[in-house]
Amino acid sequence: MNSQKPLFAQCLALVALVVALLPLDAHGFYVLLHFIVSVVGAYLAVISYQLARYNWVWILGALAVLYNPLIPVRLDREAWAAANLVSIVLIGLSIWKFRRQSKRLPEPNVLSIARNRREFETDASGYVYDAAKRTLHAPDGLVYRVLSASRSGASKLTFSAETPSGAVFKITLRGLDTPPDEAKIEERECKRCGRIKSTQYVFFIENISYFFARRERTFHGHICFSCMTKTFAIFEIRTLLGTWWGIIGMISGPGYLLENLIEYMKHSYRFVRSK
Image (cartoon, rainbow, N blue to C red):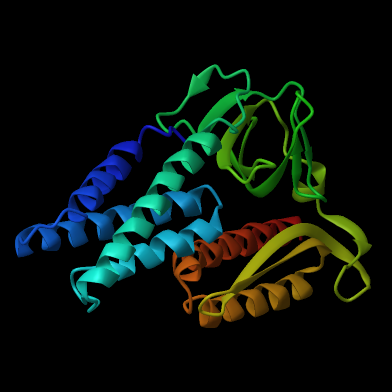
């Protein structure tokens, strides 16, 4: 992430909060202050989610709720002064956090870079994808956790991955063939039922939110068609019913539901085509 993108919003909120510490008697300014801090807090919460900094999602999301102008929170002058001081500290820390995070993104031998600095395209030379462990090994020795993988063209694979520091990025590798573990249907023991059947490597993810906490669970391995259908149904129903009870779940849940559906349809098509 380019750390300059949220910097203007962060500085705008800081200036407004500092001015609010002065003994002013202007109701219109405080209405504007609440609008600015609420919008900036929500925007920074989205940025934090993209960087997989989920604690900051809650902190900045709470800031957006506290200052929201639609359903105003009633506090006295002293309490608001304390809230403004705490908000100044939090937004100041977010500036340092985002700038530090942006320096930890991978910098591969990029020949074509998208507008978003978190998206890269480069040759696959030196990269190794371990489908079983869902990891991507880079030439510099770093190992990235793969969140999702998809074919984006002939001999191109696009990975959504996470760095060891928690930054999320996308990288498209040219000349990397689809790993046989994911594309090939094999006669082997199903991970769910234990029988020797035609299997494929699948990956499903579910999220259940508990207001201020959440549980994320994944399943990956070689399974048969019937077990794949059961697993997909269980993960999809649990996510559909349980992802909406928290801020992170409301943001990530639809993506998980869509990702599971695409995974199921893709492998179902391969099973049907093989027969």
